[in-house]
Image (tube, rainbow, N blue to C red; front, side, top):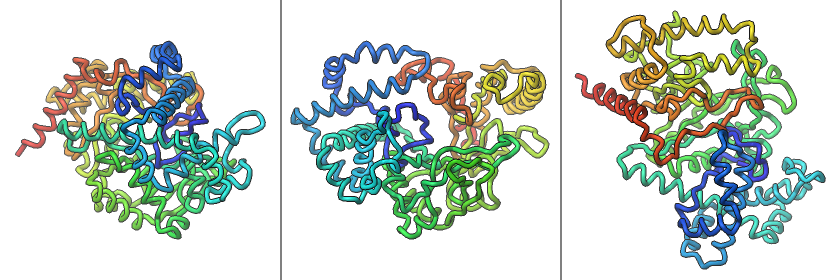
Length: 495
């Protein structure tokens, strides 16, 4: 993410798809708890960190400010204390090469080249010599501000080593895949990836979606995408390095809006989504490179193929062993009846929900309808109509869940029981991989993100009800996960 844009915290609008949001690092796991506690005490951050942890919603700007102070203190100590990990850090930085160096230089420049009002600027508004990463002025800046550049490399090192250890722990505990990275469909045009790869991205266009029945005005996502001509001209360098970065410490990768490998709806900066056009990409070349990198990293690839799918794309993905995604609330036949578990695809991951749609409990209770009325997406006078439609849908899913459990009937399940049944249901599908989001494992009502809503819904700010180390110890959660395991075992043991 951006170290200077503290209010920009959506994981799908990154500064770069090559590097990490360093606010998620766990420095104590790499440097040790004692140096961490010393830095917290010296910075006087103890009370502030405790206050932030007690807030109902994550205050990202305040968290970013506090954690960056802490990381800078740790970096200072690391550079002056003859740390035994210094050689590992230097090896990491050398291995990161030009891409890492450019990212770190961008972050340092972004902090230094502020507007007259003191705000961070788009790189196109920087003094001209700094707009090109190859300009000698950038090299001179990096030499003069070596500590500032090194700090960002240090923060990336902490993240990379932490993820590396997490993946080793996951695989050592018996997980066949372990971590699955999530590749955003694009990056912010004002970020480090666009700055450092100007010949391979379309920074003057934004990606979105055309008007449709759900979004009559279309969507503009505020991110830029690769240039198909630039990719070919540079031997797909930027695409390959991005794949390798996202597969470095994971056993799989989910590609958001996988249709973007074939085409994207692109819009001129400043224009509305209805003024966009579809831009075609060299799909076959990109699929060949994707499957090659997956093979090299021994990783599974998931393509988020929800929404309007170009004809033939799913067949091409399946032929390459790339799994699609199927979501409980969307799997219906032509008459809008929910499909039985046995009729789900064998070439796609099965899941109860995603971060962009309601949790099972929230949907069951119509919680998302309340939210859409509250934020103005639905008019208040349509509430009864919306709830009546949901009641019909709920009855259909209730029927499918009961039949799957061998308890046919019309009696409506309670929300918690509906979540139980949903988790078991996806376990009965022939999908090669199933995924239960933490929100559904815990039976939470609130969804993580409401697309198209920025100010009036707390996107990406909700907390889980317990510490990550004990989160899944909840008895109800444990029961659901046991049901999932039993369902998968029963499926594979069936003749």
